Image (cartoon, rainbow, N blue to C red):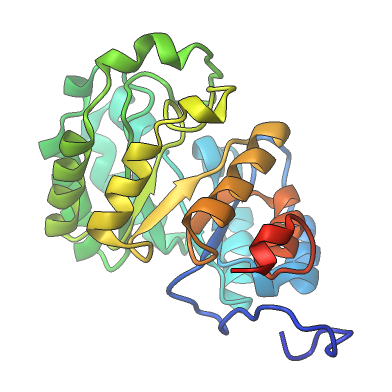
Length: 281
């Protein structure tokens, strides 16, 4: 950033917002009780490094509409888009007839991006791909950006931490199946895909056992601009994961993480601090 201090220190630079690559989306309310004032201070201080703000777990429904609008208006003031998170799956579980009502209220409250996810469903057929694709089309028709979430496993969402994914790994989708699903979403009008971390990097202690083949297959097929990868909310896992993306993928990868991680992440990404091997790239 041209207005940063110590400009004589050579660092990598980020393009001005709104960016199309190297996006950082942060989780808002869920793991912590995010307030409007907290977001205001965060964006005033670190807003140059934040591209998106996500309401996780449908937490927008716990707040009055006027408070939700304060969040969305504040984000827009700082060129930050606002994402619904995976709330639609909770809507579907209660009553599919409320999907249109949910999407219209989401637009009225100022959301820009609508995730279409299925992590709370135990079986894929509980929210089939065809139905998700139909929702993607509705989101685009309403003038918002559909961001489907793709995952290699079922029944791992809803904020429930689960270990031992390695024992289930034989039952997950193949990279070819995930690529086909991703293609279907893009054909329906998705502007970006959210790649769920469970079973790929999250919940697997040994990085040598991460399902990296899914990550590289997606990037090879679609490039980094069309994909966003989730970073675990767990501190140690998060640090390990975003550093791996920087070292083994590239600095322009789109990531979603907790707000507390963005300073260390950018220190590494912009080659201020961290592993010296990054400085040589």
